[in-house]
Amino acid sequence: MKNKKRQAVLSLALASVMLLGGCGQNTQESQEQTAVKNADGKYEPTLTINIAKQLDENAGRVGDPVPLFSVNSGIYLPGSWQEDESGNLTYGSINEGNKETLERMAEWHANGWIFQEAAATGAWDAMTQFTEGKAGIFIGRPWCIDSVRDVTSVDPNAVIKAYPNICQDNGDPAYQTAQTNDGWLMFNADFDNMEAFFTYYDWLYDAVFGTGDFQYGYLEGYDYDIVDGEVVYDTSKFDPPVTDPFMPGKSTVLKNTPTLDTMQAYADVSSGEEATTSEQIKAQAAFETTPDTAEGYVIANEHRDELISNLFNGEPTDTMQQKWEQLQTMEKQVYTNIIYGKESPDAFDQFVSDWKAQGGDQITEEVNEWYQSVK
Figure 1 (tube, rainbow, N blue to C red):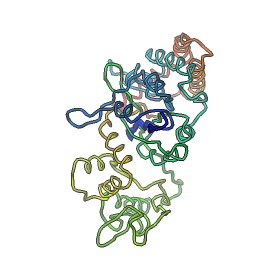
Figure 2 (figure 1 turned 180 degrees about the vertical axis):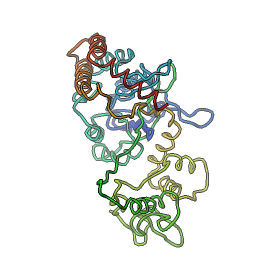
Figure 3 (figure 1 turned 180 degrees about the horizontal axis):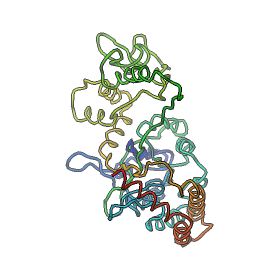
Figure 4 (figure 1 turned 30 degrees about the horizontal axis):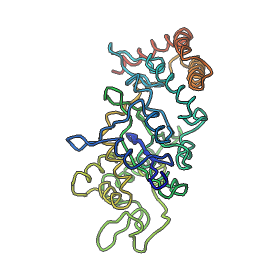
């Protein structure tokens, strides 16, 4: 096995994708079997809920099992409110399909297929497990590929590649929760110049729409350059080249340069469309400099319908304000105890009963009162 390339798979959603690789003994052949292109040229996943067994046979490990719940509960993801067949919102964490997933995850944890400290591990820590070669799979946004390249310092032959997320046994997709927003801006009640802020905010979007003073970016020579009359985003091709660029977009009141539809720009370029907007020009450059990341965005775009938003986004209901924290603590404790083998999977049934009795039913009623008022 020493001469075979070790590989890592990253699963992308902006939509997230699945990164396969790390230092698990996954061969090029096994990666190529992870997803296939259909007749339309779209990547379709072939890995199912049995992914841990499939990877264990190649000494791989699961770094992030987030999409697994959807395999048995469909759109009813833990922590998410979704419509049931009657049009009412129901809380995903109490869906009966989660019991089967928890039972499977407990088995995987006992077999060492899931990182043993997963319950206390944040997203960036999980990425570290990947870059250290301790996990063979990482679920993340396409840009995460650039953040885990250090795996090659553990194994110079490591290959990172993006694939669609796992699917259900019947071939249906496994869903992921989409972000409704990416932050907030708060203003002092005495601030009297909102028009000035929106003028500034409008300027920021010049870089997105490819118009105005910031048509290509915010600062020539930093986030873009013009070389021989051509707009360039690859900093190694700047005049002069820049190796550690300062990114002006991270110095605005927002945390990053705003975007509209990053995935679509990559899809447009991949399909052969001429790059005319700044987003498309950036995507075109990425296909030359980081083709694995660029392909990840294309895959993510193809599976964007697998992202579903939490349908409850109102302010906490009266009962939520009193009991939600307690219910959340109970949920996390039961889920974790089952996965770690401290409680039987049957504890899930008692959790559902307790959740309903200790305020969950009343919260569900209040959530649906809000939902009917905004539909």
